[in-house]
Image 1 (spheres, one colour):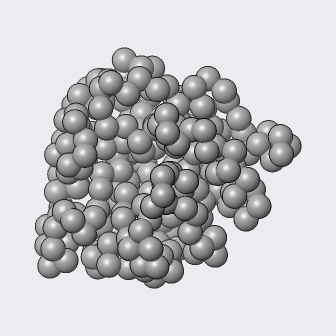
Image 2: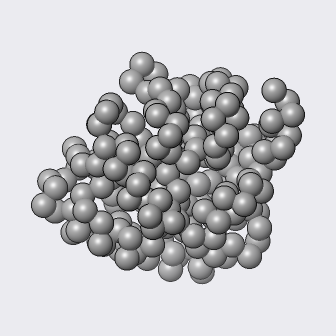
Amino acid sequence: MLIDPHVHSNEISRCSHVSIETLIDTKIALGYGGAVLTNHCQQWYYDEKDHRENMQKHIDVFHQGKEYAEKKGFLLMLGIEVTITDPRYSDWLLYGVDEEFLLSSPCLYKFSQRELYEYCRNRGVLMIQAHPYRGETHRPMDPEFMDGVEINCQPGDLPKKDQVIDFAVSNNMLLTCGVDFHDVSTTIRAGMEVPNDMLTSADFAAYLKSGKGVMDIEGNVMTYEQIRKSL
């Protein structure tokens, strides 16, 4: 089935224009079988002291969406997008998280890249840099402290696809593909092709680690092996 591993709903992500229910309905209408909910964790959203309360909100919205998704035959998985500023601004998609990971974590946006990577690695969570070539403020971070990079399919990001692929292959790291969905006007159909028996974000992380990742970029389906051979 096709999933979008990078979606946002407006209960948490202020930049999103869709409720969790509208997000699910829109993705179903576009032919998706599932998505990873990666709502934002940013320093501009809440104070450090309110981190656990905010993580509980992430979980509550996920459960709200999961209950709705199950009625629709849609798979919703739990993820998060963390924005850090040390050593510079960057956005990170975390795959393999569960409720315990979120609730027991220190304030995630306070970590440096290395600290966040080590925290995730020790807990079996993958750390993927989102849209690494977006505009002037984004560029790939230190490859030693990350698991992979994302091919983002927004119109401004997709032309950078070859740069993302080259960076991933050159550094022997994972590739994901997502839409960064925020609005019903976004009708791009792209993401990852995954097994139908997938159930959780941990399953998705294990699938990526296995090297079997299949990217679907608006109908252009590519495996890791095909990507490497194309260079």
